Image (tube, rainbow, N blue to C red; front, side):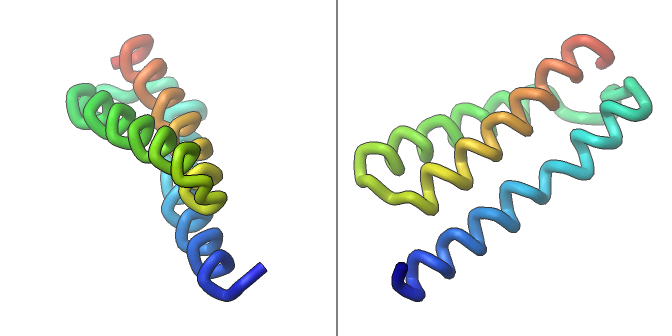
Length: 84
């Protein structure tokens, strides 16, 4: 694995994992009233398109990071609809 891929995987991991504290907070408190649903829906669409781009361009860092981000953001949207 070359250093460019390692940088990409590290950057992707950090940006994807950045959603985890919000997911944990929503899970613990069962509240999501202060989150913007339209913002997260737009974000999910963008993440999904990045995921498609990563698959088509065969970019492991893009695919991995956007898969994780998609799962976390989808959870946030579902909880926003449920608890918002």
